[in-house]
Structures are given as structure tokens and as C-alpha cells.
Length: 339
Image (cartoon, rainbow, N blue to C red; front, side, top):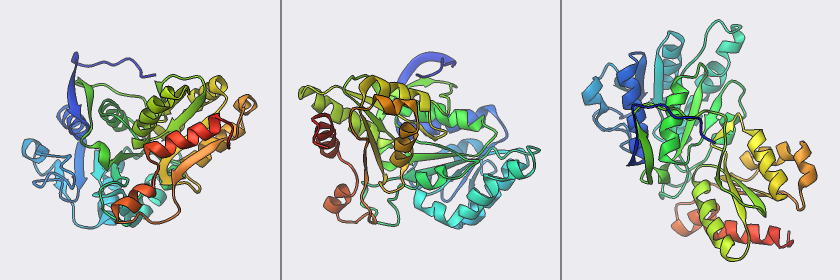
């Protein structure tokens, strides 16, 4: 569950996921002069998805900085800035472009603290607009969070709600290690209650979004919302599904997952990334290697993306990642003993 929230005004307001991110960055910039924003077109243009908005007019170009069209160069400057005591937030236009900056992310940011025996830290936050559903095709629609979650030294989060994305971004800025935030592009316009002022949601804790008794659905990012919608349909069919929002995929909250599996005796992992070697594979193995395995009454089921680049065609794009009907059908088959 969420940690106690401390803020200037306890009354929440309704805002979008994108506005919640901007609010967190605004609070951070105002309260800590070490915080800077970096990224391509985040200044006057306001970012590829208009998340940064008009913060450049409030804080100036010295703190909200447009970077050249070079992800490797920009990420390198962000890592260097973190090493010198700043708290940079670096925005990639699309998560796919992390591939151009893997040297700085994987070989530098993730390893410098370890290689120097803890003498330095790299408190950089990197934001990745991710996922399919916008018709952006194969090179702008991937879900690569499992790549970065494989790397020791990085923390990887996938907030699913406006409340969590604000609180987790603020928590990431207080973390001494690199934190990678994957923000699903379809979530930017979703809305929800968000407390005013400063608060944090702890990294490394999952959240039970819906209680149930027949099956545990462990989901990430937008799949949390689709799993909740599927759970509503399943309830009409007499199946009680518990939905666990991982929120953090490195480090994973094992305790919450294990407790849910012991309660329901069935496990379905739902995620958008390619099924092969994805987050669901790690969660499945984690449960299989734990005492929770003895409570299972059915095989563990993974429901992930298909093994193909994301198509441009809308129908094929939807068919490449789990939809509500897919979740409902697979969970029903599992509970009914057809898998």
C-alpha cells in the first residue's frame, strides 16, 4: 500500500497523468536548485508529448534545457551533471531512442557508483514515453523496460496512475541511484486524483488495485487499467480476480506478489512488452522459486506482446499487445482449468 503522504494541502485535485508529471517537475525545480530538465524540444515546444509545457518560461533556459538531437550526447551530459552534484531529469522523445544512449545508461550511469566503491552516486532520472496504441509503428512504439530492468544498478518504474507518477517521480529525485521511468503514451491523458504539493510514493512497493480470491493478475503500466476492466467482466462471470500493480519492476515487490498468490492459488502476468524474456517471465520464475509455488492450483500464465515489431496498421497493432478481451479470455480459461 502507499506510504503516508506528506504535503502542503491534503485535498487532492483531478489532473491528467501528463499534468501530474509536470506538477512534480515544477515542485522539484522550485524547491531544489540542483534539479534541471534536459531533453530534445522540451523548451519552448514543451516536449514531444507536451509534458514539460511552459516550465522553460518559469525557470529559464539554464534549468530547462533543449539538447541537440543526440540521445547519446544528451544522456552523457545528464550522467555527468549527476556526478557533479546536480539532479537532472532527462526526457527521451520516445523510449525506443534509449537504444541510442545505452552506453551512457548501461555502462556509465548504472556502474560508476559500484566501480568507485560508493564514493560517488549518479542521481539521474530518465523519462521514457513508451508503448503502443498511437500508430507510431515499429520504431516508436516499443516497450523496452525489461531491457533496462536487466541491468544491475538501475531502478526501473512504471507508474500507472497520475497519483503514482507524481509521487514516484518525486521519490526518484531523492534517490541516489539512476531511476528509469517508463510512461505509457496512452496514459498521458488519463485523469485521477492527485494530492497537492510534495509527496512521495516509495520505489519498490506494489499496490493491490483490486482484491480477489480466485486468481492474481500481476500487471504493469497501462495493463493495470486493462486488467481492472477485465476483472469487472470476470466478476460478472463469477470469477474474482485480484489485480496487483507492480509499479516498480526493479526492484520487484516480491512480498506483495507472493502473498497474493498464496491467497488466490493462481497467477497471470500481463504486460505489454514482448512475452519472450519479459517482465512476466521474471515474475513467473520468482514465484516458481519461492514457497508460494506450493500454493498454486494451476500453471502460471504469461500474457505479453507478440514476437514481432509493432505494426502501423491499427488492427494489427492492437493484436500485437494484450487487450481487455484477451485478458478476460485467458484468465477464464485458467480458472476453468482449460490451461
